[in-house]
Image (cartoon, rainbow, N blue to C red; front, side, top):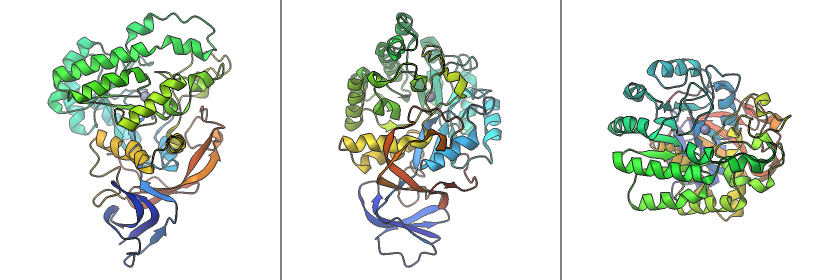
Length: 442
Ligand SMILES: [Zn+2]
């Protein structure tokens, strides 16, 4: 074997315990007893650290080409590597061009090639009028398509109405392509007048009510059922929508949902005035809402946690005026998803198995990469993260690898330190050192 990684706490699909992972040509050849390591050319012994599949993050805004100054493939995938993420999937918007045509997808691939420290996949976009592009993009390899039901924040990625979706969904169903949806409807947002100081978080929160999400989820359940199309709700924040999803699941509707670390860690009541680094849409809601999101994860109604890493140049966050209404919405967290989720999960009695399911297995399944990614099992790529669940650290934004350092996690005390990351059997991160890029486009 080229490499054997062993440890006392290896997180396998059905258990956690001592074993050894045997790697040949970048792929896991077999998982064997802890002591069965005699054929190892190189042996890595993780001791009591956790050995888990590399994380899969299917919601990342890399913003390149066109807005590379916001992030870019090099910095985003460096941050991923340092955060134990071995596969990320890039969102179709904020780059120019947006990934809404085959030609634009090709431009994106040209931009990403040779720059990536981890494996990278791509979402395409559904925008008004591009139904005829979807088959070609799918054929060329996008993992699925994203749409917005409210303005996205950038002009080149227009939102869709129910009428547009009625045109696109039969085609998506025919292609068996997943539609992922930014689920807020403009109606309930338009009804809310933003009274109060723009620097108060409560003013912003009131401007993006739960009802906007609830109605959007209701619409997508109805359309998924009608067209037999697979639908996924991105960054669910309103816990009121959980009951709708639960009922849809019991009716056999093919709809899934994700939430994000910031909705599970922060609470609206604790966000200081003017702290626009906390702004994202839909917004971080109340403490009580956060606890109900955790319950939805426990029961499986929400099946994954992805970062929605969405950075921008610091100036666009308007930190000086602290204007929540005018600031760019988006939270930078690609490198921190594992420790944020683990810190909160361990306090609530969840296990490392739960964490692997939410951060690795289910995101891989969402984009149909589960035979290669997200699990420590024979036949999967040897993507592995070794991390210490007991070590505590204080987040220093300046030490993070992504381009613009402003993040609401600065100064937070978290549990879980990534020690080493392996991509297809090759060590790509080791205690602060990132190796040259070997990521592939998938
Ligand atoms: Zn996003």
